[in-house]
Image 1 (spheres, rainbow, N blue to C red):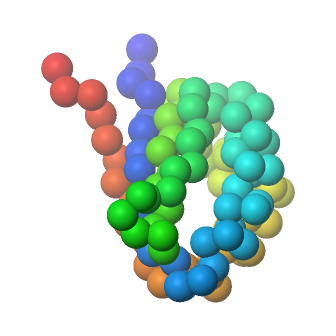
Image 2 (spheres, helix red, strand yellow; image 1 turned 60 degrees about the vertical axis):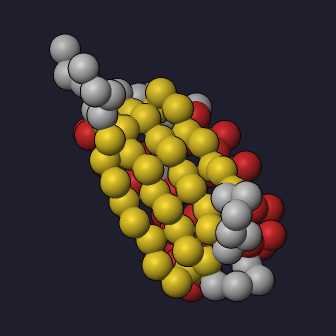
Length: 97
């Protein structure tokens, strides 16, 4: 059995765009959670920096995540938020043993 594919995406937003992104985040969050292979999909705001969002996702495997990236709702959200962020980091994580 393969381990789930888990990662954290930290997004540094263009100042003043957080509310615009958060207005659309629930839609993509619900759509992702309904996908086959999605174990969890959470969008969090940083309490110490209003211009930073964190997405924590867990998928059955890397293939399930790859399929998620091809979905229309995912593509629309990525296109929407791309001009609203300054940078992002993508970190894969795993539980320690």
